[in-house]
Length: 239
Image 1 (cartoon, rainbow, N blue to C red):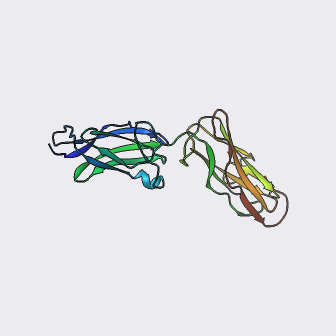
Image 2 (cartoon, rainbow, N blue to C red):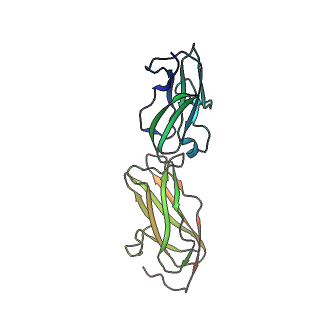
Image 3 (cartoon, rainbow, N blue to C red):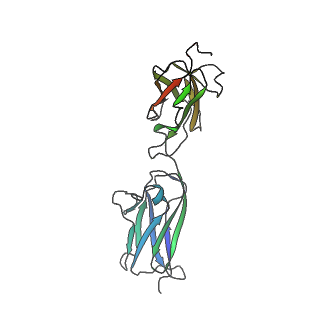
């Protein structure tokens, strides 16, 4: 019988981890879902292509090998089952689609989850121009995986704020800067972000957030360090 639709015969279960190399097999089927041993060129698309920058999402078989980028699969009478690999990098809901001419497309929906935290990044930069002795935003730091997805961390991840140059800042965990000065905040279990606030008694300097996490690769500073200039009357810093 003539081909009617494409079908993903095998494929990974959802959710997928960002950076996975997930194998699919696709076949041409007739109206009764029997395999059709015909010729077809299958084109693979996904909305993940846009999120991932348009390259490196699909790879040729064999299954589980993401080394040769290809967005097409050839089906022939001698090889009616095609294999390809899907490599998502951005977390979120994605759809994988296989098209070939007038055949009804095959579609698969997946949730892509972020990977392990590897880097600390600024979700929000610290204030760059602040009044002396006034509580200001020291920024919001977040944990990200190697592909830039915001991700959670296990217990024990610490983010430490520090000031450089002549800033002479004290750091706080509350937006009024009244709960006692501290330079460290904990990214607790299941947490991805943490905010901090500061008062400066000096002049021009920098604010840096640095992560340390025992037992994981989340170590290092969020870049760049934010340059902060201070205006207002010199005097004693009120704590």
